[in-house]
Image (tube, rainbow, N blue to C red; front, top):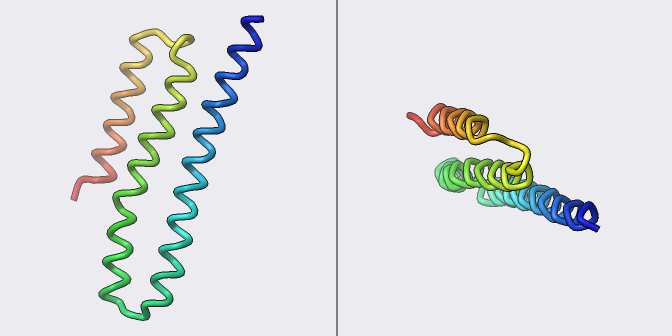
Length: 96
C-alpha cells in the first residue's frame, strides 16, 4: 500500500510540473500573437519584457516541484548543491 501512495504523490508532482510548462508555453504563444496583432515595435518590446519575468518564475516553480518529489532520496548536501546551481543559473539569466 505505501508504494501506491508514493506513486500517486509522484504523479501529482509530475502533473504539476507539466501543467506549469503548458501554462508557460501558452503565455509565450499568447504573447507571440499579441506582438503580431499590435504591429508596433515599442508595444512588442513591452510584451516581450513582461515575458522575461515569466520564464524564471516557471523555472523556479518546476525545479521546486521536482525537488519536492525527490527530497526523500536526496541528502542535504545534494540539495544544497542543486540550490547553488539553480541560484547560479538565475544570476546568469537575470544579471544585466
